[in-house]
Figure 1 (cartoon, rainbow, N blue to C red):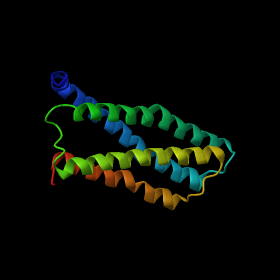
Figure 2: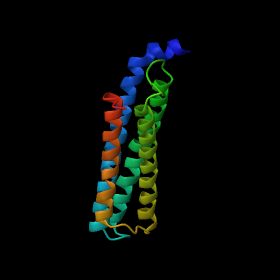
Figure 3: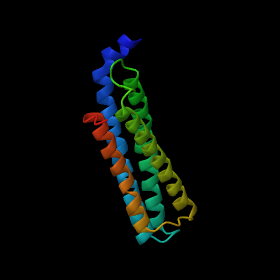
Figure 4: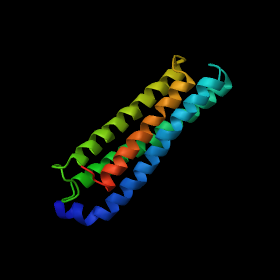
Length: 150
């Protein structure tokens, strides 16, 4: 089985990178939609429905499948012999950062549902601040994977 993972490594890694890029695009964009939705739209208006549709489609059509494929191909890479050194701190920091990114993903879905229900309590400023979370996690992940400083 390990030979299969080794032989498929370049394809798996390529698909993982494409999946992560798609996921990150959604994680960067959805909170920005929330900022505009919060600051510019009145609940129950046609514009509110338009924002809800955009947010829902972004989440369901792009972000959810991209997250799932990122995890699928990422776990396949983990199973590839010689790719991950679990004795080094970088691999654990990266793993916990990916879990953090996933938690943020589901946090975004909860906020999307708040808009659907008309129960959003966060401000545009709070969404702007939360939009920094995936950026910070992305930087940690990239540095752990490429530089392997620990």
